[in-house]
Length: 452
Ligand code: PXG
Image 1 (cartoon, rainbow, N blue to C red):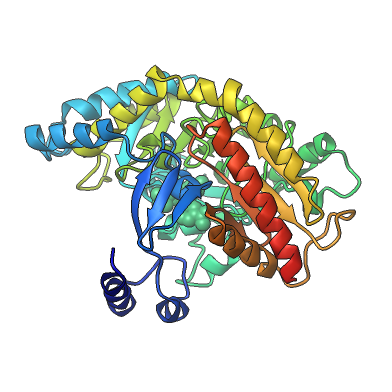
Image 2 (image 1 turned 90 degrees about the vertical axis):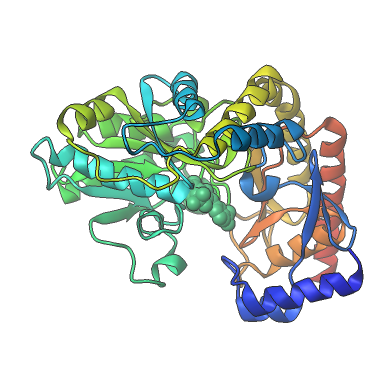
């Protein structure tokens, strides 16, 4: 793109486009970065810079950029039948096939899919339908959802309420009623002298305390990301999820795994629940379901929940125009075909993830890095003022932002949340690209130290 076209686009953007999660006034002054092309693990911007995308867009481009088959699947479906709904006792072939495919891929008896356009809407769906599930069993008071402080479940009224981001709660009068939060499992900051495994149990038992405080007859469900992504890739100790599961079963509280980031191979397993060895009753899906090529979300329900909704729920007064949009579900099917037939998830687990973990651990040796955490294909570097202590910078976020900008200058996209540098590359990243990632990150860390 020539310079004049780029500047013109930036001016139009500043004048007419409100960006999510941005200070729009500051961005308008600076000028947006405009991306133009992607191939494999790389994207190119309008200035012609080639960037290694260590963040897979926004945790989603699992099969990598530029897969023609996905465009072809969309084009075929658009030509054949661009749209029909699932409302009037109708549906379309790819949507039926995708629901069966998801039933096969997800654990245990999660056999029933409700489709949405996004992860946020899938969580809205879950909030409504789970409350309905209890209400039709004469337990309308069993309507409280428990989430975690700093959890992320989207930006709709329900999604942002289920999430525990204080900054989001400040805008729009959230959380909505009957949503509570417990502290997240983050050993680095919160574990004190406990071993991670001891701490995992302590952190999980916060759920039990909260259920007892509210009353088990009031608590409908617990919702959590298997690994908390947006807040900074908090990977819980292995003891955490089995204990959460035990507590949910004990008090008959439904367990909702928000797999929007963890799903479709991010951890090297198909789902975070597989990675941590627990069985949710309900799952939230989005992002990797289409590798981000087209919007799609889904709420998966197990036989128990779906059975009650079907047998006792009456007409489900819920759904979007585009629930089960044929173009989106056709692309999801093709994306899953690629993941399965090319063995991308298995290859991630056995091939590239161990190498990525090794190189990530080497980055952990850098003087600026207090912890290098990783699970499969998702990780974080915690930047700290004193490598010997598990403590944050006083002014949180400045150093992370600096490091992120250094990385960009070096041709690498790394995301920063406060001073955690986040990693979530396309699953198809090669060994050579992991080496490139290592070198560019190390250089950026050095330059960050020099600039401090
Ligand atoms: N659940 C989880 C666990 C997510 O990570 C959503 C739900 C919502 O999905 P939609 O499709 O409505 O965005 C997400 C989305 C960040 C960031 O800053 C993360 C997400 C979205 C935007 C920014 O890391 N995750």
